[in-house]
Amino acid sequence: MNKLFLAAAIATTFLGSVAHAEDAKPDNEVSYNVSVVSDYRYRGISQTTLDPALQGGADYVNNPTGLYAGTWLSTIKWITDQGGSSHAEWDLYAGKRGDIAKDVSYDVGVLTYVYASNDLPTSANTTELYGQLSFGPAYAKYSYSLTNLFGFADSKGSGYVDLGANVDVGNGYTINLHAGHQTVANNSAFSYSDWKIGVTKDFTVVTGSIAAIGTDTHNYVSADGNNLGKTALILSIAKTF
Image (cartoon, rainbow, N blue to C red; front, top):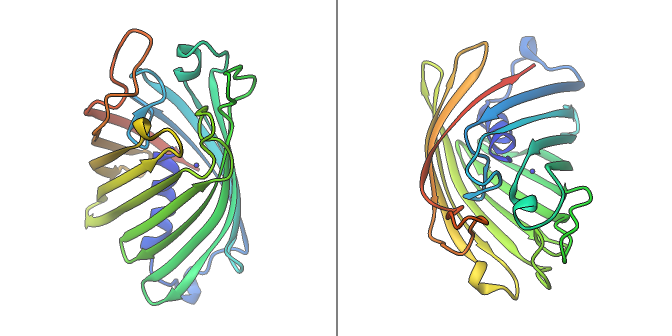
């Protein structure tokens, strides 16, 4: 679930205070998003072998209940780089979010990553359950795989810890901080930690971001030997409508 873009959208929801009556949202809302990124990083690992990606999605939310569902797609290269045949990632997700107390909220749901006809020895298709608690601008999230994880054999039960904060510093700027750890069940050599420090700017028409992203692993490499988890500066432009 960009993932970076999707996580930012969820975090933005948590940053808002309770709306006054005159700002009440409609019961049902549908929004769309498109973005271009210089390198699609997910959990710190490049999904496009360090190349740019095109992305887009749609979201539905029922505001009275907090129930939501959505879909998101991105171009990718890592599967063809491993000898498979899929050129796109298609995410499907649904869940529920709401407030627990003042400045404390939750988000729980299920997310499926689909790589159509990926043709890898172990299918890359992955389904995860996730739960998140937010405390003002900070959050803690855990994802648990119900299936094998992204093509790793016998990796059901893998987990990802995601800690971060999206701090509004005024004038349309938000500081983005993240630290994570991916555990790959029965494939410990591929477990690793990742991090991000970035800033997002709302230009009204579009949203732009720049972030330094990196990992502590050298075990994710492209066919030509590039480290897919190396530290890099990532740029993105996104629009929601």
